[in-house]
Length: 413
Ligand code: ATP
Ligand code: MG
Image (cartoon, rainbow, N blue to C red; front, side):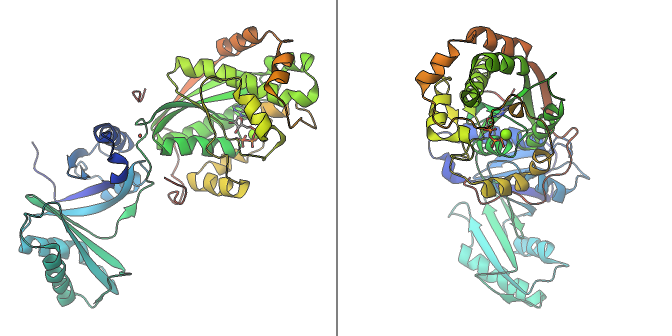
């Protein structure tokens, strides 16, 4: 085994989600996702230690770049670039020197933690000894509540890690640990955010986009592709299903009065999505609907739409308003693509005044005029699949990691 390197990245995860015996699963997915996120940065060695994961990048790999990447992996609570040291007081002092040297900080604190109480030196002793050591070398003062530099000292059996301020991770659960879902991805602002929120809860998200080629140009397909690619930086591999929907809409227009069409389109979308989703092992469908945002998103219409699918339909944005959704789209880097102009299939054959209250019975009566099974089969058979890998073709991450929004299958591919 190669010798342990002195500098490494240390990753902490949310213990809270690990209580129900799902810890091994959680850690397996987290470790796999960390390796994928870092594949192009010299594939670091990944080691699990009690309550934390240590990453040792290949020689020459930029540790800060590694930490930046890790800071975007779901399941990560925080990450820091750390000095590995022995557990003697002298070794810890030297590691603290390496962390603090060349830095100016008006205030600091030492935050020492021991993994096992049997270790020499209590945390209080370490805080005092190492704090005095720093004060003797730097023009600074102790501030326990709001330190400019928080020097963390984690003592494990046989080794310790010392590091400065931590970089917060996105929290949530590792992608894959909660299973697979299929998200209906339009070119709009909402559905990419909805997909992202399920990823954050540990789902691998497959995508389906309904387009209207050749009735409309392929703008909406290009947007869906771009959004799928951007979202792939959170799950490392994605699959996008492209369904030809123009002919299906035409059939609806011929048989269904204008005010009822939007709901009938959505019910057809759900049926096709369900067929594709079941084939791909998805346990639920996801949409970007938010209560009352548009006429098709009233409680009555949502209930009517739900009636078309037997898989659960998850709507993570249901209680969010447009401003909140927009802020999140900006934070995750999908907003710019979503606001590009396009002629989505929903703009084709869409009535000016859609109905707001359709019952399931009314919908079924209207659908009796259609060859439902034939239309669904037509959509499913016409579907093309594309795949996306991380980080190929992917631009920079959004400028700040998304925080704020509340933060466990089947194999990833
Ligand atoms: P979005 O911003 O996601 O487009 P929206 O506010 O425009 O949502 P609707 O047009 O009513 O709302 O669409 C509701 C949901 O239906 C979308 O969030 C998306 O999940 C799904 N959807 C709508 N159009 C399409 C499409 N062309 N392809 C795939 N899914 C779609
Ligand atoms: Mg839309």
